[in-house]
Length: 417
View 1: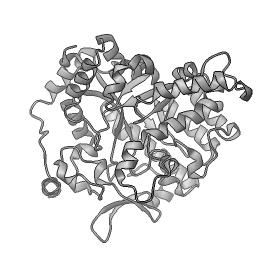
View 2 (view 1 turned 90 degrees about the vertical axis):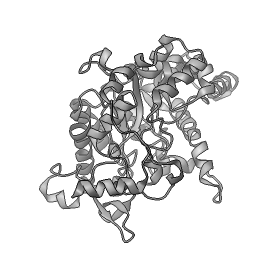
View 3 (view 1 turned 180 degrees about the vertical axis):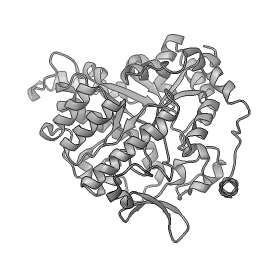
């Protein structure tokens, strides 16, 4: 395939939310309680919700920084590439990277609204609704068709979650983001159908995809307290395996046939081993009397799961063992694993080296995501204008050079004046 003919849909990117995102989106009685960005005593920008602060680590916004400046220390808005938080610059960065459509996960709110949900009340429900309204109106709708709306939910109460699922589905959202292992956050596990059944049912009926992004389930790994950060970063996809085990052997995949799950940033290389193991266990341990309605666990998995990867060169050589219809690509902009601004070159080289056909490349880079997320990808942009070549032509002259934190801060200050 010619690189200019590629179409790239990233099923996992991130937004560092703009400072003014809540303006005008809340009932007046709660406007003063909206999360705000406040500089702490060290001059570090932090989102604060009802006295609870959270920051943005440098690894969450490293695009175009020199590698020697990457780190786990906090990053302020002034130091970030504007495309991290500014929708217009984000589109230009996407064009330069040849990415046509993107699904963006939260940053300060948490992948499963964990930061906001520290306060479980009607005020937080209003904050979550305001967040989703901003995500749709202030982010996705600004450039129709270029973003895939992805909602957060009030997961501490199944009925509240169901109400928000129904509300955002009517508004055109395509996905929600939820906890990998909710029992680690004080909620019932996904084995508890009394609690989660209404949520699974709402997703089953609306067709919204259940995104399970690595991050909320890290506590399952029980790593050594003196282990370096490398351990967590390398072992993170292990949590996706634990998560899908709960869904496969619990009620989720057995009782809700239309439920679709995306394992965001979970990788794909582990899947053939996991499915072989699940099938062997199912057939060998008959005394457990498990029932998959005449199917093998691997069949059920492939009916429900879309597995997402940034780069997985060895796994691409056995993509048929994963399931060619179960793989979707992700860019991970603006995190430290991101392929920006060279995603097309990287993706095509990896798939060509694995011997993938043009048909397989199209499935992995856009068709599988479009099918699972029920997207009409070319409703606003003709297909021939969604290619890497067409998008990069729009970005001609756009600055993608390396810049230091200091250089960004100086430019930020200049714009402010």
